[in-house]
Length: 222
Image (cartoon, rainbow, N blue to C red):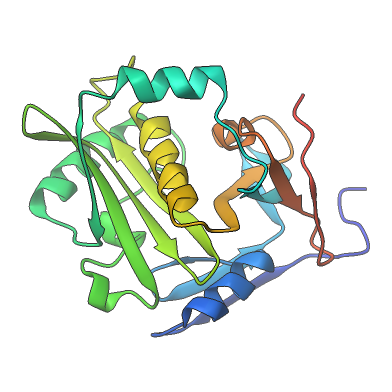
């Protein structure tokens, strides 16, 4: 039986402000947020199948980059990368419109469904990583900072540049930045217990999953 003693969890609330220590506590309890909407759920539907949701995080004290991740960082070392406060631009929206065409299921409609347009409109400290090639925006991702942890929110890249692994690249830069800040955990977001397009989140060393009973456990890669 798919449901266990934890039962079905599907909770939401809205908040205009959440201090850094509150964000740490929310992430540690399996919560996510897009803009002012906070949510957590332990089951989802993908490809017509009901699947268990796995909140994932990295224990940064034990984390090291794999060989393939280091190759990705070297491959994209020529990009002009900046890290700054959240600030959605028309260039960001144009990149999103191209990126969204990659999806055949659950295609996102608006960038602002994931992140507010400005840092001041976010309920917590929100930042972005932008990657440019020849001055043109080719990748951008958004993440939040708590007191002792960070959480990835959304990433997008130019689908015409597939070989560079730009989606993974900006995620690696988020992790790198979290290490530089001396944070304890980096939250990767949700994945499923079965194969899905979220499986890239399962490929990081020192990854833990939330068991929906209040515990974070070591995630065993296949």
